[in-house]
Image 1 (tube, helix red, strand yellow):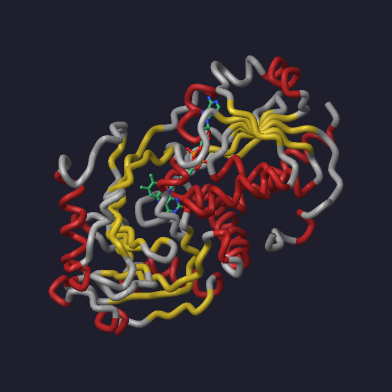
Image 2: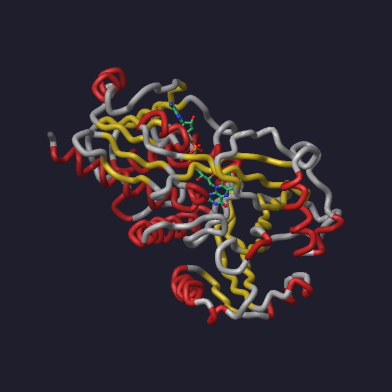
Length: 375
Ligand SMILES: Cc1cc2nc3c(=O)[nH]c(=O)nc-3n(C[C@H](O)[C@H](O)[C@H](O)COP(=O)(O)OP(=O)(O)OC[C@H]3O[C@@H](n4cnc5c(N)ncnc54)[C@H](O)[C@@H]3O)c2cc1C
């Protein structure tokens, strides 16, 4: 396996840890805990493909992401650290085709010169030193075939991890199993804090890591709400569409105005994803091109934005994938719950894949700290 990072490998920590959840947060946390030396049991009621993590468009993005907002500076600063750590790991994983991770160019387009928007200028300045092959160049708009009638004025691009989550989640589970994590299919019901001792006894652990995404509402009483999203899947095999190996985005914040956001991202070798949709508090997953106008509008928006897509074929096997981003008003909860041996790692909204390695390193550190206290 591609190396994770410095002191995360084999540091000889002792103890048994229960991870609840087998999405990207749970499995990555399990791997990082294992890398530190803990014995790890993963318990989840759903595994890929029936987890939100498989739905993710899984483009690595510097926060705030195209569909996301941050409500406080501390949270934004922490997110940047997680994001940066994850970038390095994904870039490393991209060297192994079995992981499903690709490092490919993404271009972000804006309706005004970047320098006219202080917040965006700051984001761009930060990104420059964090990513590979950063470029700020308005000629990307014409060169990439963006519809000139839409009036985009500026653009920047860089190499970003783009993750084929079907392959990646399969690979992650395999890595967790190979690393010796015990994997159990089971549901945890009721308040986590109240059943901390009984869970610890049942699974023989000294600490619990909660990576339950939307499920955290039930386990903690915290408000984690769904932000529904949907991605249209086009065939990207070079037949009806020249094969696309670059992503194209327009953010909701900053420049998208009332047009909604644009998310065009190649997945693996032969699919191109079109988005995006961000619908608060909607839970129905039975929506598609045939029965839901906002998805048809999203499709038209992408075709209008990048006219070359007009002749492309929609994937007949799975035209649309729908999922619920686990959103928390205060953003990600990554902390030890006071007076317990529970570490929470949930509420990643539209950035769970992007943050996954950074958050999981921090989870492993926090578990190591709390077990070292020996209370
Ligand atoms: C359309 C869409 C596009 C997205 N695009 C991106 C993107 O481009 N980049 C990005 O970084 N992110 C993106 N995301 C967000 C990303 O998918 C999520 O942030 C991420 O998957 C959250 O992962 P998770 O492991 O926390 O949760 P999940 O994947 O939901 O996993 C939760 C796990 O917890 C288990 N669980 C829950 N409750 C219980 C319980 N009571 N008992 C036992 N087990 C339980 C579940 O069974 C599951 O195994 C997107 C999401 C959507 C829907």
